[in-house]
Amino acid sequence: MTFTCVAGLGVSGTAVARALAGRGERVVVVEAAEGERQLAAAAELAGLGVETRFGTMALPEGATRLVTTGWAPHHPLVAAALEAGVEVVGEVELAWRLRPAQAAPWLALTGTNGKTTAVRMLTSILLAAGHKALAVGNVGLPVVRAVAEPYDVLAVELSSFQLHWSATLAPHAAAVLNVAPDHLDWHGSMEAYAAAKGRVFERAGTVIYNADDPEAARLAAPYPGAVGFTLRVPKPGQLGVVEDLLVDRAFVADPVEAAEELATLGDIRPLAPHNVANALAAAALARAFGVPGEAVARGLRDFVPDPHRLALVERVGDVDYVDDSKATNPHAAAAALASYPSVVWVAGGQLKGADVDDLVRRAAPRLRGAVLLGADRAQIAEALARHAPNVPVVDIADRDTGAMEKVVIAAAGLASPGDTVLLSPSAASLDMYPGYPARGEAFARAVRGLKERAEGAV
Image (cartoon, rainbow, N blue to C red; front, side):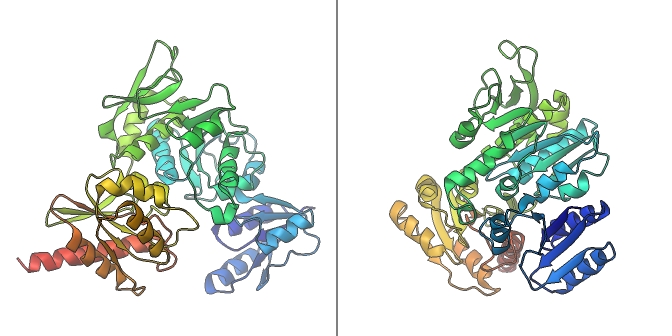
């Protein structure tokens, strides 16, 4: 009998333990924290015969497999398993192995940024085509639960962590949206991070890549027949943009002579260059699954963007205040900054080892001011001093709950009519907030407070 150790009692870890116990396997979960949620999950699993060991990260003696939900190779538990020759797999890899006969095919995508938006666009397109589809993986339901359900197709968002621990995935089609430095503290180097992203292509039926992204194109280069997507006019074998149309020259009878219109730019919300790329990736994955062109447009129109992604909060005194708190790395922030001509930039947090010089250099002509907060704000301030020395910068050292109100007041003081105050931090939020949603909500509250005071003064 397989004896599996499951790392952690999170949503995915609990789902893994439940699935394996249902197959009659011996399962032990190790969990460092002994909070109310963890105790409740352990009690539920105990009824299925699953043992939970609290306060330890030791590998149980006799374990033949460790299932991790994204822990790094240098984590003591994972390192101990690897040293002992115990197989280490991720939740996604386990889900792939546990698929029943006639399981739903996977349409998989990864990238540094845009994954959740693209996978939700893809799901909307699949639903518009009449398929029973679900977004899973790094978003929504754990894959190990979804594979047991009778779906027609799964739209699977995969992080670099999940791909690192996946060895046998063979999706029907796979896409890489973009690759830029991120999570280097986890992977150890940019090369290792990119290699993890590239694993999504290894056994994919159709390889789809961003032809405008050099690293994505490099990862796709070894695969003959790979399909590119581009914001330019598409070549044969690509999807792209012609005037205001999304056009397919890959999944048509004659890619050299024929093209099919899929949607218009007006079908995409919010309309920004990186979001057009997300829509093209989603369209390409759907077309690889045989979705007709008219369903692409309908699905994009039906798509409702998730919060904290270029979300307009309010307009105050002819200045737009936009929440892009989801931009937790420089690549995401660069895409957001490129979407507006004149920006007061709100940035800072945990940079996770990422460099911001190139971001600031490219954004400098658009910047009218910057307000910095969070742990690594000094690194951003130094880059601004080097590449945008004439841009006024306000440093907010506060870390308490009122810090964002000071940030918004400072940004309002730097903004002129026609500007956009853009929260696009380029950094993670855990130095000050429970997560990027809480950071975005704090920004929105502060902006609404600003608007109330402005209206009260009239």
